[in-house]
Length: 175
Image (cartoon, rainbow, N blue to C red; front, side):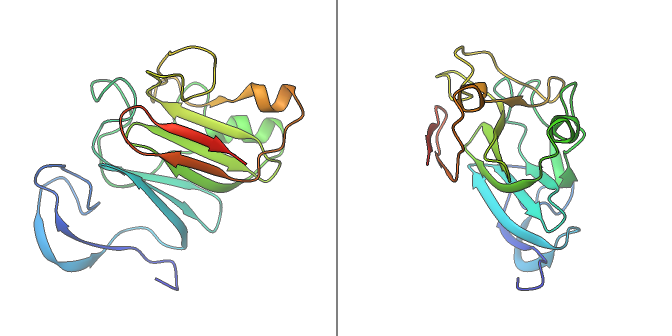
């Protein structure tokens, strides 16, 4: 909505939590306002919903698919949950190190990406095809938190925009 409110409706019986309306799966054909406000962007990949608010906080809700295929990943979050301070390498602490703020978000089915005002990219989630840009296929769970794609930083590359293709093995393009 123009004021940053988020409303959801539909059927989440096959994907509990994707509507962000609470723990009980629903088939709700009437829009309901979620308990989150001032949202400037929403992105989704399958059953994962990621939102950015006007204070540069990131909110997550949906199925527990991010991480190790749904067993020890992020969540499950049945309502919008602020994930900025989650994990050993929390996004809050990583951003504070370089005085950065989040300006954009993207997601695939199982991975999440953040772009900062300095053109730095942070990510987390599954990594079966190396989509986290770490040179390996190691998954990052909510216990781990986030990682910086150091390749861009170490080569003085400023990323302006990310494009993320959905599916289990995401394809990432950086502009």
